[in-house]
View 1 (cartoon, rainbow, N blue to C red):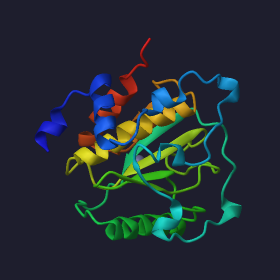
View 2: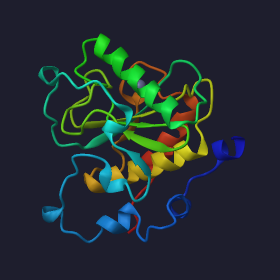
View 3: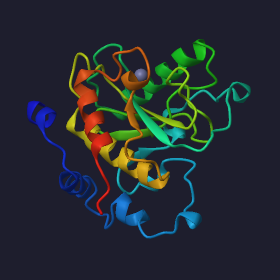
Length: 220
Ligand SMILES: [Zn+2]
């Protein structure tokens, strides 16, 4: 854990990681999307465009409560992404079932607060599986007053108290870089919750990676 925590993530290292994480693929998100004119680039409505690079679980995989559509708003174009941690108890579970239950509980907590659905768009578990949460068709509910155009990604765990796993960080790297490309975001539009609100989220042990992701620049 310590080595992973202190690793310096270069773009080359990211690409190598991406290839290691998904050895069957021949292209990273960057190369997959590069060269297409912006006018013909389709804006994704879910994260399935990353499913050859990450272990992607569609929303149905965690058996959510259906959203309360009257409490949701159609999404504006996405131009930024914000990273969160779950931030409650330390979380070390590895199984898909535990992750699914954890995400169900987050949804329940949010809906008890009169949200229309879980507030985040994507959840990454300790094994680096990425679970679709609130549909990207709807504006998230994860940063007070800063939800418009903002994709919310939450990592299971409390990163004030524990370190994210290597698999979580690899997945986060791929997702954030893929999203920045697919939505033609400026690379500096990558935030931790703490950048936009009064909170410790996403925790000191995760925030350092968020800062790194924000500072990555596309080649050329
Ligand atoms: Zn947060």
